[in-house]
Amino acid sequence: MEISWDHCGQAGWEYLCNRARAPMQQRWEYGVTHVALGGQVIRAVIHQNGEPVAICQSIARKFAGLLNVSLATHGPLWLAPCDQPRALRLLKRTSPMARPRAQLFTATDKSPRLIPLMTPTTNARVALPVDMGSLNGKWRNSLKKALGSGLRVRHVACPRNALTALLKTDHQQQGAKSYRALPAAFTLQWQRINPDDLRLITVSLSGCTIATALFIRHGNTATYHIAHTTDAGRKLSAGRLALWRAFTDFANDGLRQIDLGQIDTVNAAGLARFKLGTGAVAQMNGATVLAI
Image 1 (cartoon, rainbow, N blue to C red):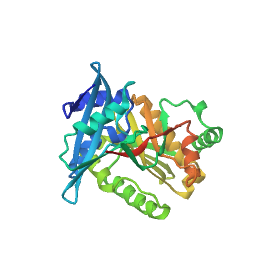
Image 2 (image 1 turned 120 degrees about the vertical axis):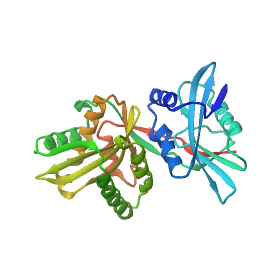
Image 3 (image 1 turned 90 degrees about the vertical axis):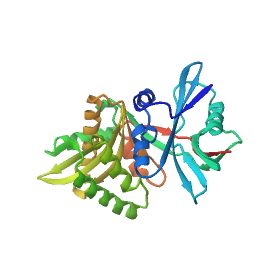
């Protein structure tokens, strides 16, 4: 088993990411955005018998002016069957980060040299294209009503002013509903670097916007990033209509999967039902672990 650090260019990295339908946190653009905000990124490709079996992108920062900490969210990303514990040991031992250092990964391995820091989360992921028959019955019926309600749906590259307004609304929602998301500065920086990646879908009635959904597109996958629906929009299932437009348009563009984000069937059961009603698969992620 061999490992190379920071030798893979963007085209090669994205090719490997596309093979695995990689999530946003392992995409090249995610790392570039982090660097633009003052961080560091390190990327590794692991080969076994001459074939790539894993990639791992970690974002890194220095804490207290001394400790270098790297975090590989949803990484390593496994491309083929391999000796995963050995690969993790290789990542830890050969990291180009200066010492002293702490390395965090997402892993299911139960090795005693991996200390769990955060419990596993679960994401809802939708494979594209989506057939209407695969939707949950209630979800499908609500969508059909929305399709026949005379609502106008638009899909555009998100304008700067619209993004600023949506981020402000999301900040207010976070406070009201007690959840956290990526900092607004991260989303704004991503738009500066790759403006066409941020896709805004709006649903309006009589000229008034009643639902918005912001997606970040990356390679052959996309992430459902921010959404907001008014009371009128909820009554008309405008949020479902926005998602359906995303499913259709992204599939036509050649995308293979949309990550609808984390689900919590205990503390946010309604939102979990909404996401899973699309036919999404609930995929458990590994725990966040500290390699020692």
